[in-house]
Image 1 (cartoon, helix red, strand yellow):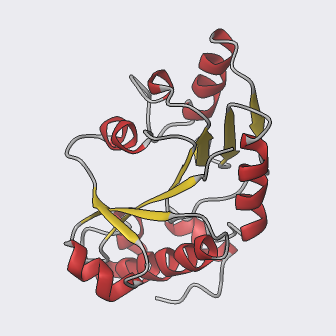
Image 2 (tube, rainbow, N blue to C red):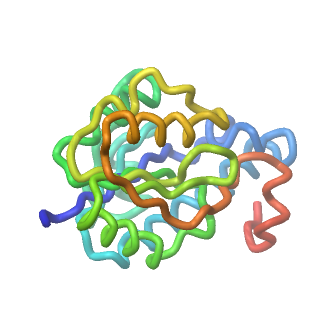
Length: 194
């Protein structure tokens, strides 16, 4: 199989624009600090895999990200538009694994399992407990998996699975993990410290 690209979507930790759903509990600075910690942790986990790591960024420029996360990564600005547009711009060439930075329990073993799954199946998904997913890997570009999606709802995972079954595309599902999005999620990870 070809080298798998790892594509991480993240934003610069600017107070007021990062982890906005945590602002009521932590304030703008606290929410940005949590986002910074989560992104740094995710990047360190991804670096352990040894595959090309591409940061699709927003909220800053490549120089700011270079200073923050290091010069050994590939940086590409996110395209304008919604999550559909950003994912479609990132999935070619495949194989590719796309993920965000808000899953504190993500480990190298999850990523290795995703890479292994892509050698046997066309799609691999890491489901999140909220009905979405923390990771999606595809062996070939499948735009229909991202078009007209009800993002940020509990329908994302079921809709994705329905589309895969309709197109008769083989897939594997990884362990379900929790995202850190809302104030009530913070109790799960006391080591996150704003």
